[in-house]
Length: 184
Image 1 (cartoon, rainbow, N blue to C red):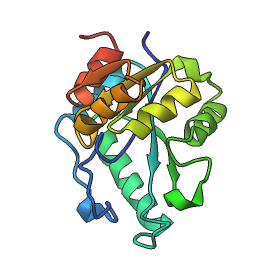
Image 2: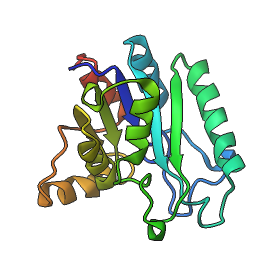
Image 3: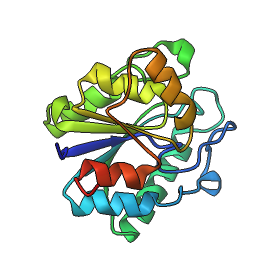
């Protein structure tokens, strides 16, 4: 199944994650092959939508404006490389807020599906954490891909132990993109 929409986590999938949080553009660094992957998805008519927890806002480490500036610059760089990010949905809350938009809750994905007028079953999620895959499963995404970048190596065992194995495991976003578009 080639999905019409591919949901992507940000930190650990597109860019390097940081325990100190990515709070501004100077701390943002694309992972190897991620720009190439985003171009490949775009060339194959897959709409890329970022769904990301950004609790740095709720923790007072970054503002919404800071995060939106990162997203604008990220989208510009992706476009310069031949890709396209159609939209970005982010949760600004901390875990203690128990909101419906913080992954593993499916709120971000379901809101994106409503906005795009698409059924979750026609989508795929690429993430590097157990919460990304759980979110996708709870939302009803048609495919799930765990990448081993970011937190992926540890998440793989956790997901298997919890009986929630991803549909596919890829080394990075490029390998995930090739699998999703059928260029394996």
